[in-house]
Image (tube, rainbow, N blue to C red; front, side, top):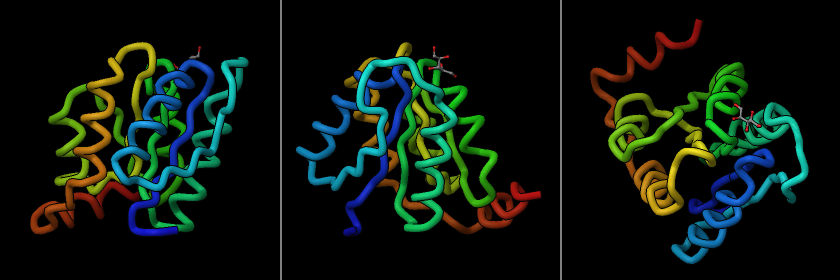
Length: 144
Ligand code: RB5
């Protein structure tokens, strides 16, 4: 795995957006590890959230999770200590989730967010560094 490796996963409702983002992110030089789902057959979003979070925690790369609303994926991901998952529907949220919250998982809504906007949010999220400074203690306080 290289510095450009990222993990991505979805349920059936996020499948189409996942497929498109896989292709577009690869075209932009990212090494995309697709953890499923691999069809539009109905499935359970927590299975894919837990699978992706285990990889993010083990390998330190960032992850992208997509379901219909992004909500279920975000809820499941944030049950993992060390995972900071952010549900984003606007570019500013995606950028600040990294800059201020040091988020390591981006959650997207396949039934809400347009594919072009989703791609912009992925790139902002993947390229933005954590600002550190006053945000370090605040992020540390998240874990209970
Ligand atoms: C699937 O119908 C839908 O419930 C799921 O994709 C997600 O939106 C859950 O939060």
